[in-house]
Length: 569
Image 1 (cartoon, rainbow, N blue to C red):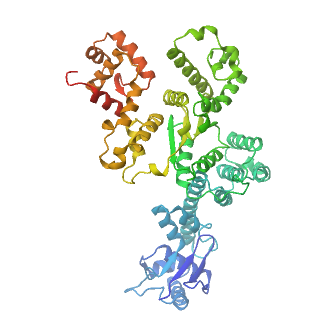
Image 2: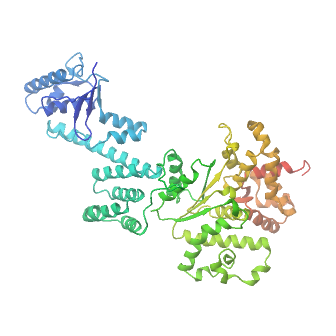
Image 3: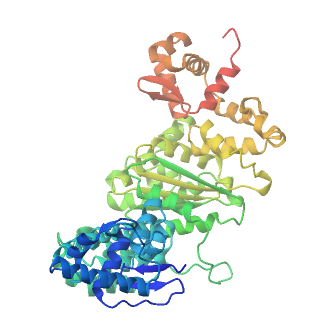
């Protein structure tokens, strides 16, 4: 049996399953078909339908309805079902209406299908095809579907933005602008998409030729957000097409859209999900660098401070190398903003020659551990100054070659900036031999054991994938009995005083009852001594104060401390 399709979004067109267009005798007959299809499967009394479309006597209206039904049955055989009684309806599943499919796609979450189906206003060529009652129904349906169409296109444009599909973003934003010409957000999305696509001139031209002339008609006038976006577009060079090492244009960015979307969501929601760290892991050549470059490109127009660092194998022993590269712009910016604000940063000169004049001779006589702690605090202080102006995103590539001092400082920065609009994105190369069974997500295990700290998780990850026990029997791997991981944990506890060890042991035993007073009593320390020791353990990232109770930052450290205790202890 022949099936039929009705395109109603963006003008009405009726076709059969071969694609051939079907003509009916009048627009009123087309309107009747669309109305019946929109109420798919519903029975309608003939008198009700007759009055709905013909504003005349009931006898003449019923006669006109009979002629319309004859026309439908003649040109769409089988479309009008035979039902008992004085009623009418279309044959179920024989006619497909794009408006119904559009709503079904939207409900099922098939955004791409919904975007493809919404081509314009509902049945916009059927005006004055029925009575006032029909006109009111048509207007309500058109407005309802119009709002759904706006919603779908907004979601589509946002998804394209987050997934790095700049060309599709421009097309979607242009459709949205045509649909809602006074939607300022849609115009911003189009200009942003054009800039991301490398066409800054078209973005500026759209602003000057389209947005400015109609700015007075915007509900609240031209917003400051739009003005700032255009200013950034004019002041920042648009991204160039990517080129590989041979100067050839790279292939389109495909296959990493979900990962890019994860990064974009994290950057967009910095004010909500602050203090975030994301580790991008994979073997060489899998696309980590391209993913990060696309991410950096995607935030090119955002109001953020972007820091970038890269680690090199030949510089793995150079202290603070990647940190200095990343922080240089913040240090210089702080100097230009306020020279007096940097006078208290007396140790920064040991990292940056520009600040060498701030070094004080007495700093050389300070205990090395205390000096390092003060240096770390100064770096965090500088970053907090910058965070007052705007969020910070720090991208660090190839952390497998990062020196120990940089890893320690970044660990400290990430922990101290918890609760601030700061995002750290780090990439790490994992060899093919280190691949793990899909059902044993060691990276997730490492993150869990490390309490979410990316640098300690990196150490746990390295210990796990390099373990002979893991390789032989991954499903039964016990981190506490693994020699490699035990060495990692032992290093973290190395150099602690006897009082600090006692306080860690007391905290491990007391668990949820580890109040400062109880911990001090069990550890055999005074409250003052316990407070001093706790401060040192906080600084090392081993303990934290959680609701007036001491708690381990990492579960694996708690388990290790507990396992190392003797039965008598």
